[in-house]
Image (cartoon, rainbow, N blue to C red; front, side):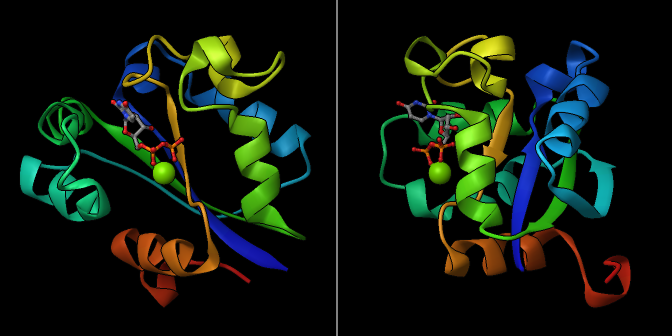
Length: 138
Ligand code: UDP
Ligand code: MG
């Protein structure tokens, strides 16, 4: 069993898509282990995305991530990191496969509705960024 972090990003929360996205996640067999709604401030968004701090889109990305509420969700399952990334689809929704969350819901390469961890080390960092042990079941 593996854990991964899902974020439902501000564009999706604004468009009332929390339930639709969680429906797709649960239908794919991933289990919700922890969940909270919150709004990051700019500095917290910069901390979460620090791996991208040198990228040209960093300022805009962190501005957008702090622009409204998000939902943070810990997901569990066999091979959960890879399975959830496949369910999300490519970063750019125009490149995302049919039936993926980003193909169905994303607005643009930046406002792409969801985040997912990309490796066990980043999943561990990202989960502990949002949740302590008492906030997780299982
Ligand atoms: N992003 C962007 N422009 C880009 C690449 C990425 O605005 O050219 C944003 C987008 O919201 C993406 C996030 O930065 O989800 C993190 O980028 P990453 O390459 O890690 O993509 P992901 O892992 O989310 O698919
Ligand atoms: Mg990434």
